[in-house]
Image 1 (cartoon, one colour):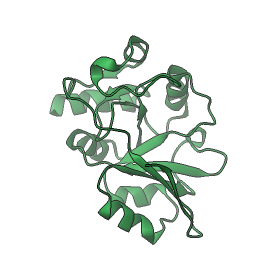
Image 2 (cartoon, one colour):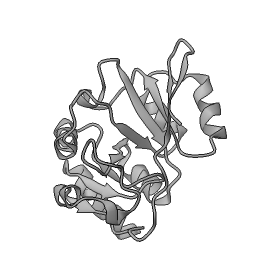
Image 3 (cartoon, one colour):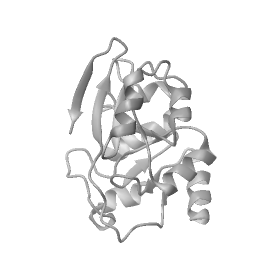
Image 4 (cartoon, helix red, strand yellow):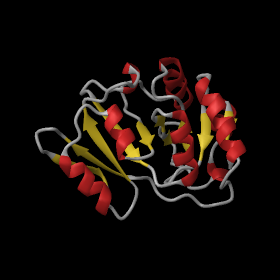
Length: 186
């Protein structure tokens, strides 16, 4: 695992794209603070730039570094969630402008995956984590289902868990600072 972390880290630091296993499905990742890397993800996924993407962090402390103010209820939701849960927060900070939609929010998941946690601890910034598919195509549930377009379009493919079937996409909940809670994806 150490070699895979070092290889992925080197690619992220130079603005490249990685294809990697997460606590949900395989993801396309890049540095959340690098606008040109984020543009590459949009291009590879053939996704319009106004459509939001998810970022991952390794713990609550890291989450606090990239969101201006976290509603208290977020901690309870994450503590008691029975599956990976992404929360959309108001007022993200210290990430590239081109990953923030017009409503000034950002979807962030605290991961519970050993590889992702270790990579994030070394990288010290959120990593984009968008599903490894071209927009409009089904989300691949295993590495073997990822299209050659995606595999050929990244700079590094993490060589871990390629035989495992992925979990399902995370639940997504939107929290606003004024106390509104909306379930976007169950």
